[in-house]
Image 1: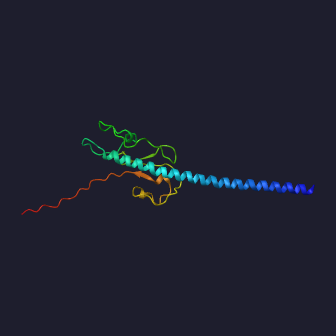
Image 2: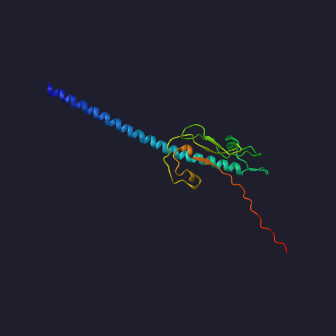
Image 3: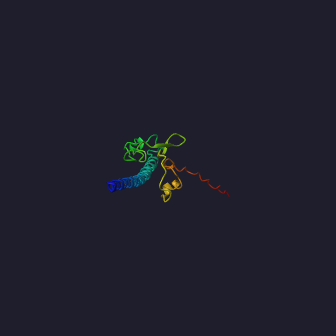
Length: 167
């Protein structure tokens, strides 16, 4: 009878060890899956943010009828630009922030017009470098909320004309 109790104890220890190992493996798989999902959302953030930047640039450059180029006053104007007779669509639809699933944080210029968007996510980024030239400012940023997809209108520089020579 004594050897039977010892065998039950060993079997119980074996089952407990298997449960612990299974739990550890599940935890590792879960954190790996979380990283995979976050990396995919990060790539989607880069794509969607770039789409907003391009749409704002398109809106700015498409002023018609001699109107002064201007930034949009709200994001809806990117989907339906009614400044002319033919309605323009600079963005197919309004995309949510892929990191949070919510609306973007809107970045405005000093006059209150929209110049860009950014995420409100405070998660740490995976991608630290290797950005394209449009996103080169993201190098070294540690949070997604620091990635600002902004269109900067270039201001026309006044070139001084050389003084004409009179003879």
